Length: 327
Picture 1 (cartoon, rainbow, N blue to C red):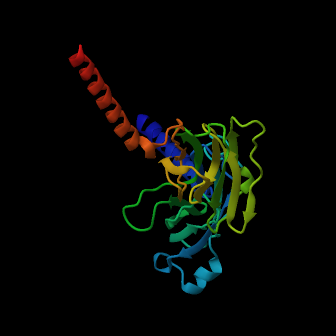
Picture 2: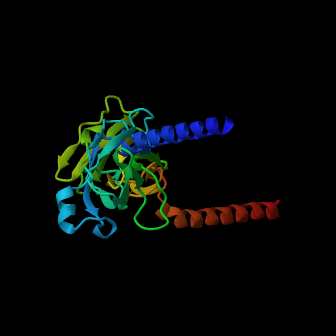
């Protein structure tokens, strides 16, 4: 009696297991994309696509003609809204992989790539990926199981369906200091900052600029654009700063100033460089001016004044000594 019950239970478990396997196996595979932020900037809207699908004909039971007739898998676009990078809700999305209709058992190994985009600051997945589809004969027909390897092709790679992309941005802060006994702490100096954008897309309106100035009425005007350059012109006095935020990584900058009759030096940072992700570039420019106060005495007459003083002291000593002898 117990053997019959055990046999029935084993059959039920096998049937349940085969049913569960078939349900899981027949589902199309999915790929997950995580969009991360490197820096304090807000990411632009971005669409990721996949291309260059290829099937290893030697790994499949099909001829070249059958491979062409079968067609390739496909993945729809994965689109992120503006500001999605780094967001736990909007920064993670998945897309299903549409498989061809298989008519023969076998192992079908595909390679594919993420298309390289052209948005400044965005890192695209450059490693070729693998999709391995195993088609077996089930009780009710063919059964497919899939595995995705997002980190390469060949032996020894780890199975994963998660791809991480990043949006990297940085910040540039320019500060003015004035020194010297003739340095005017209220004097505004004219600055020009030029941002040069690589041959990629940049949402220029999202690059922020904040001016903090002691000069009454001093404001930061809208930048001018010419080709791939963005130019800001503004004035800074002692202690004033201007901060440019959400500059995509890869953008280069240059800072110039009209120092007039002051000696200009960079106390911190550099006049030019490249913005990198999650980095704050601080450039402090010091202008120095010294002067010699007019005391009414010409330094050119000092030697003569010394000689006259020595002669006067000598005469005074002679008169005093003569008077002492006469007394």
